Length: 444
Picture 1 (tube, rainbow, N blue to C red):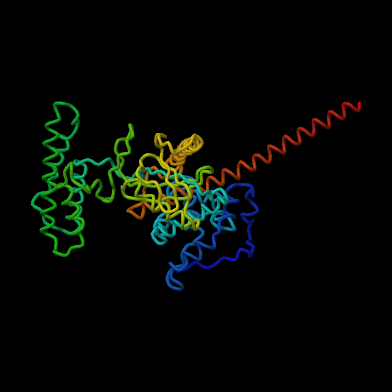
Picture 2 (cartoon, rainbow, N blue to C red):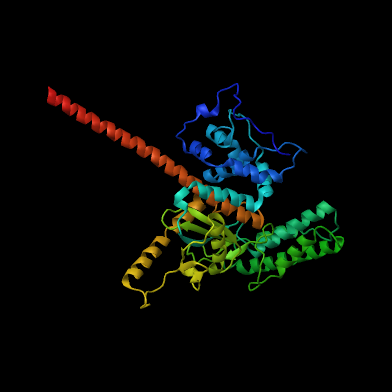
């Protein structure tokens, strides 16, 4: 059910938060710059009108999501910090200090599922609007990166062990009969699987891996025989059957049982040969560095992501960008609609004069500015490790990270403007004081 509307004009018994906070604080300025009403209008139809328990405030939930990615903390941490930070409470729409938790951490999960990827995209568009004229450049640059999923490094031995654990848990839950539990056998095999890098243990570990795989296949077949034909576990059984059958050259391999959509992506990094997750595309304005595009894909060729990048830009600004600068991973694409695609190449074309070559060379140098933006998204705004579940979780995480980056950019800009103002004021007073003392000395 929709929450009851608060009257902001009604005075509280205690001191208002607005009187306690500093009005020059970036979070205070950001809270007054965001158009919160559009979230109320967009998300209110997702709630029941007059049935059930009243929900938490929409501004509260949207504010918590933004603060979580701005400060790079978990759901549990942001709920805990909210009770201690008056700026967080003011940002989320509270008028008086609230000493208790605003909600349970799990309610943020339900809210993300409720509004979906389209709702998160609305939050991202608002973050682009906050940057004003800086975001309205007609020249942008794009690049892709890997958004790693929160899974362990996949190996066949790990997957087979997890299948055995899940089959045993399913057997206990449903009370299914099995001929053998393999508890002692698996313990002995686990001892044999250790220290496989040593030459003397390599053959023993390989035989143990094969036996564990055989046991996993036996348990899956036995549970499948004992389950009813139309069981709710048929999808899980099909997944368990696919893992032992896959080989090194198989396509659409399973790397995680709880995240089967994960892809293995090789970006040619020396320190990390393979990354397991999905591909994220980031678009940034050429000169000001505002993120104007954030999309999630599985693992396509980079050039095939440009159509969606341009569509997202059009949905925000109503027109396509004039220039789009990319790296050599996008080779083969030169123009899409009205947008020219520029990628680095040797200037052997005699149709280009020296001025045009110099201009393109500067643009390609400037394109490298997207790399630190991606680095900040990964280290500061939770793009480096995606904890959200499923394909929708991939879309939500990249959009929230980009929205947090844009908000943080404006907060830093306001902080610098305030610092410059006081610095200029200090030097002005100091300079005027020196002139005053100089005039007094001349008078004496």
